[in-house]
Length: 232
Image (cartoon, rainbow, N blue to C red; front, side):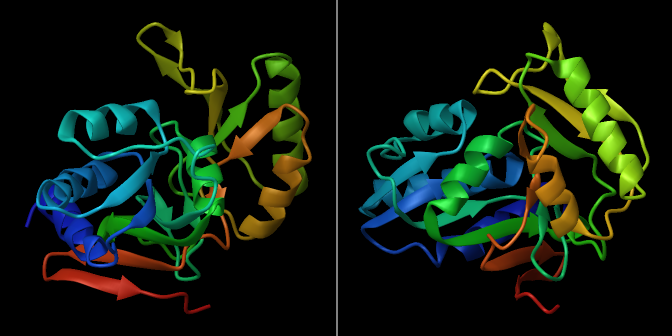
């Protein structure tokens, strides 16, 4: 089973949690896109849902495939969000934002009664941090914000490159018009403390540590998909 097939298996398993009439947060990324494709088939066969996309990219795919959409202002309380992750540990703490949609993803997840993570087994880690942590920042004062993040990292014993994410046209910009630093910390032993302290930096809009948001994770491997609950 190749990587895409594993993503499809995870998406198939997540679809069993979707009920008729749900208000559904729809995530961003390659695994979430497999979920959208499967969801669209169910919608075409009569499933009634209202989706709130976490990115413009996801919104475009939903429109293309016929998944009904609303804005989060129209549906400010959701039943369920299904989204991927760049890393997930055994406490269901996540690193997200590899696709650049972390702010909207976190807002949608927080507005949902439940969040289900879908991922392949390569995303499961003992300790978060091998995947560079995305930190979304305001363009104003970017240099000062970088220095503040570097000083924070040093205080809590973290080290590694802080790299401004780029695109073909220059610095990468999120759907909200912000920039992203990718922090290669390597290992984050206290994700909760780092999350709190990053939020205290004025130029930080949001970060990719998702804590106490996921209800369960569906992890796909060569033998199929399994459900992972928080164990620590």
